[in-house]
Amino acid sequence: MGARTGAEYIRGLQDGRRIHVNGELVRDVTQYHGFRGVVAELARHYDRHHDAALRDALTFASPKDGFPVSNSFLAGTDRALMEARVAGDRMRSQYTYGLMGRLPDFMNAWVTDMAMIPHVLGAKDKKFADNASSYYAHCRDNDVCMTHTLVDPQIDRTKGPDAQHSMRIVRETSAGIIVNGARMLSTLAPVSDELLVGPFMPRKPGEEAYCAAFAVPVATEGLRFVARETYDQGRSAFDRPLSGRFDEGDAIAFFDHVLIPWERVFVAGDIRAYNAMIVAFPGHVGLQAVIRGTEKLRFMTGLACKLATVSGRQHMPRYQEMLGELVGYVQIAEGLITAAANETLRRIEATKELLGAKADYSETFEVARGVHPFHSFAGGAAMRQFFPMVNTLVCDVIRRVGSSGFVMTPTEGDFDNAEIAASLNAVLAGPEMDARKKVQLQKLAWDAVATEFGSRQEHYEIFFSGDPYAVRIQQFGAPERARCEALVERLLSEGA
View 1 (cartoon, rainbow, N blue to C red):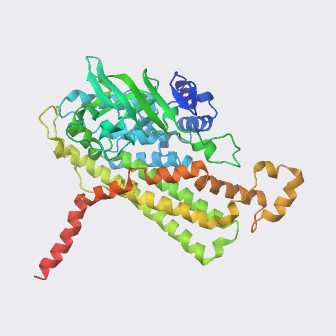
View 2 (cartoon, rainbow, N blue to C red):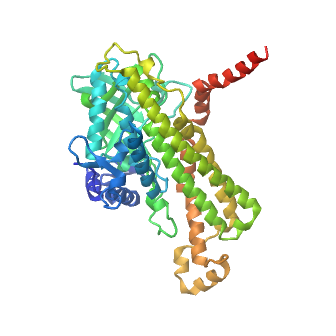
View 3 (cartoon, one colour):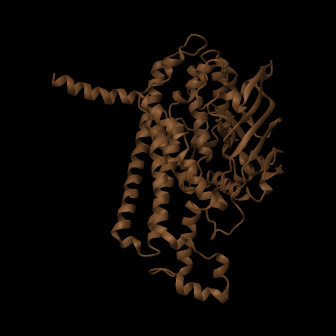
C-alpha cells in the first residue's frame, strides 16, 4: 500500500469506533465539529508525502515492495539513513509548528524502536519479538496512524495499579489475552487508527497481570474512549489560529474484557521485558521528540519576537534580553538534535555488538545485559528536563511581552463591522503596523498561551515524559552521576 493520502486516512476513521465526548457517543469522528480541524490537519500531513516537491524528503522505499513509505519508520542504522530520518521528522514538525506532540511520527518512531529490541521482548518467548517486528512492518507499509496509552488512572498514587482500576490481563486463551480495566492518557486517540498499550511506570513483583503491551484497532469490540471536551469551537482562523487546527484530543481508554490476538501481543506478564522495554529502545522516539520540541521552541520564540514588534518593545533592552535568552535556547536545542541522533547511532551499534548473530532469545538471554548498551541518554534528558523548562519559560516571556495589550483584543467580526472598524484602526495600530495585523498577532499569541488550547499545551509539555519530580529522581540514579563524582575523586586523589 505505502504512504496514504489524506482522503484514505479520513475514510479509515469511519469505522464505527466508540468515542464519547461531552456525553455524546460519536461514531463518525470525521463529522464531529470538534474533530474536523485536526482531521483536516492530519489529512494535509498525509498528502504531503505525495507532493512531488516533498516526497523524496519525507519517504523511503519499503523493503517489502518498494512503495514509498514515511521515513518516520526509517531505522537510522547508519549516518546517511539517520540524516534522512532527521530531515523528514524536522520537515513534518515544521509544517505543524511543533504543536502536535503526538503527530504520527512519534508512534512511528516508537514501533521502529520496539522492533529493534528482540532480546528484551523475546527473552522468554521469541514469538513476542517476532510480533513486534511484524507489527512494525504492518504499520510502515499501511501507514497506520497510532496513538498510545501508558498511564494508570490516578485514584490513589500511594497504592498499586489494582487500586487505580488499571487495565490488567484477566486470563489467557488459545486466541490471545483478555484484558479489562482502564488506561490513560490517549492523546490523538479519537482520530487514530490503532491504539498501542505500552509500559511507562515500572511494575513490581506481584503485578505481573498488569504487565501487558499490545496493539489493537481503535474500533475494537469492547474498547471505548471518553475524550475530554474539544477546544476547537469553530472560531475563525483569525480568532483561533491554533485551536482550530492542532487540538489533538486526549482520552481515557476503557477495556471491557477485550480479546487481544496473540499476534498483536508484545509483552504478556513478563515483568522484566515490561520494565526494560523503553529503557532498551535505541532512541528514535526520543530523537523525534527532540526534533519536534526544537521546532516548537523555534516557533514560540519567533512568536515572542514578532509580538514585541506590535508595541515597539523589540527596541527596549529589557525585552531584548528576554528574547535573546530564548534564541540561545533554540541554538542549544539544535545541538540536542545532533546529540540525540549520534547517541541513537551509538546505541544501535552497541546493541548489534551485544547481540552478535544470536537469533533466538528464548530463556537464554539475560534482559539486563541489553538495557544500557550506551550509558548516555541525551534525548531522554532533553524530553524530561530541557524542553519542559524552556517551554514554560517561552510561555512566560510571551505573556510578559504581550502584557495587558493582548487581553483586550477585538474579533475578526469587529473588524468586519464598518460601524466600528475605523475606531479600532485608530486606537489599535502599532509601529508601522495596521490594527488588523497587530491584533492578528496578538490573537495568535493568546491562542498559544492563554486559551484552553494554549494552557493545555503548556501543561502537556511539563508532563510530556511523566512527573517531573519522579523523572529527576530517576536521573539521580543514572550512570552519569557516577562519572561526575569520579572527577571529584580523581582530583582528591591527586592531592593525597
